[in-house]
Image (spheres, rainbow, N blue to C red):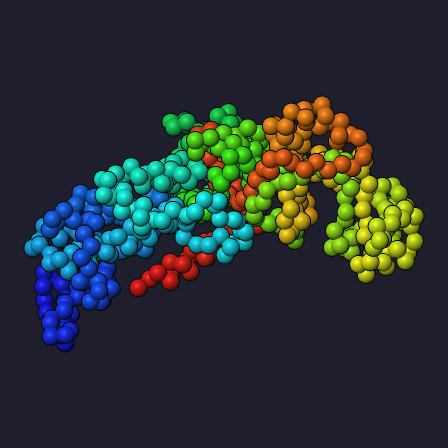
Length: 530
């Protein structure tokens, strides 16, 4: 074994079959090579003759600026590859073996980067998201890359790949803006505690100048607006805009929740945007031509069509999701296949055990008042109450259901997309809850604010189901189930940052999924560290 110096790098040489074989060790960029690596006859991808091509320098620049995409340049050995490509372009010409080694290293780094850019860094199942893979076969990143380089369109091709992530462009812009604010003087320390429980119009506050400065930096208050001596005028309007963008009641009152959101630093917001970009890379928002998407932290449903790769929102409405403490709505996607009009509510065993049965023991008349009945194992309906019936329910032999009607917990319509969690969309007899800002009140299923509008979207291509017939079926009081001729994909997603109409909105991490994703990404990064 010989140890030599060449071009400023260590070269390990050893005798193989009577010849001398040397393997570049380019400062951690290139792993020790094998004879097969060095004796390859494949045409280099990143070289023109004996020098790195323009596309090689372009590729290295992409790796160096991976942070602009919310990724980590060090994961792709960007600095070392930049040094190696620069030296190969200006120093002594590399041998064919050395050239092959550098060419392979840059290819591997770009394949890794492109995979992360388009598919994300971690498996969504690690983050409690049971999303299906796209219907079309996954793109062969290696073949895609080689074609783009050989056709000399690497830059436009990568830009097009990155643009396929929904909201990618505004989120990248927002990421740069919030990173630029990290050292802004308005965030050198938290805002001062409130003088009382809350600050209302006309009241004074010692930190009004810094509050004014902070709202200007965030774009909620016009630059140059002087800080008032009291909470009033334009500052109240700016505070309302900030509250609207952060999932708060836009009342212009500076209370504890608003103060807490104001004290979240730009660095923390940038991390929230990075997490959102990661989620969007593996959330299948374009896998079908028509979709119904529920964003859990935002408490919103959007129905849209995908045409020529563009998302066109046709419908949006408020929703109520599962309680954060104990009945969280799971994240997954399935096809909606049925609509049930005037549905029965078959009370899940867990709800019956912990809520309905105790209520009936304390108040037997609750059964009749709520339009409930027992159903035996053989399907017989029993409407009268008896204590032994509750025992049969607890043993699993019987079940309790609620008949169609004005008190039915599912309202007058149910949208069914069969899944292992028994989650579905439905209306509600308590629409007042939609007026709350935070709407996690359900046992896991999702209540929709405008069921007729959603039914019209789902049935828009079925001329047999105009709005009048939909409303009549909902009001009939007779349960009926319609099988959809054209199933519609339903996606239950989780995004705490949303770009809407040129503005950025932040929502609380309702179920702690962002914290879990951040921890998983740190573990992923640690595993990549040499």
